[in-house]
Length: 155
Image (cartoon, rainbow, N blue to C red; front, top):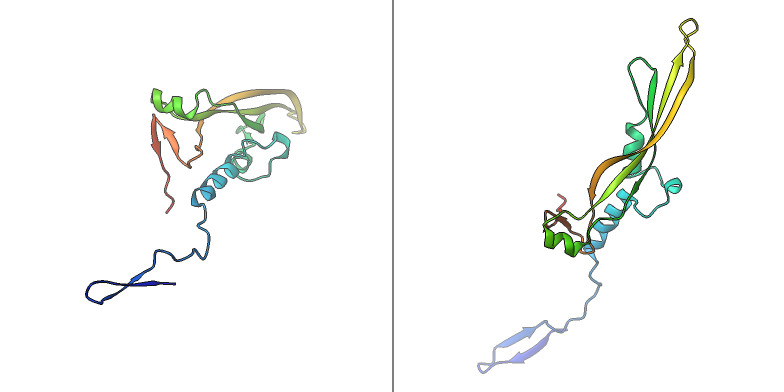
């Protein structure tokens, strides 16, 4: 409750500094960190990833077929390699705190019979492709871009 104190002129002052907290303050940064982790799914095993986040993005784009129908590019899986530098090194060197993204793609080449139009698999090649560096969120919920700590504010 409010504590009342008297001053020299008998004016009552109310002091609310000793009020107990009714509800605990939520960790607002944890919401953004959990959302970004759910999008990337860095720690999930490749076979056990749900069809959401970055996995859903790749699944929506692939398979890609050529115009003639003789080849098709399929998405198999993706994985993140460990970041080259840690957060402090990125700040000191003026670099971005990011992890390399490697995607495994499968190229299927078909042989089309001209008489019947039936497709038969001619060749299958599977290869890891470097897709770029994906910025990683720090423990504070920020990103390190060119050595500067940045915050993403959603609107």
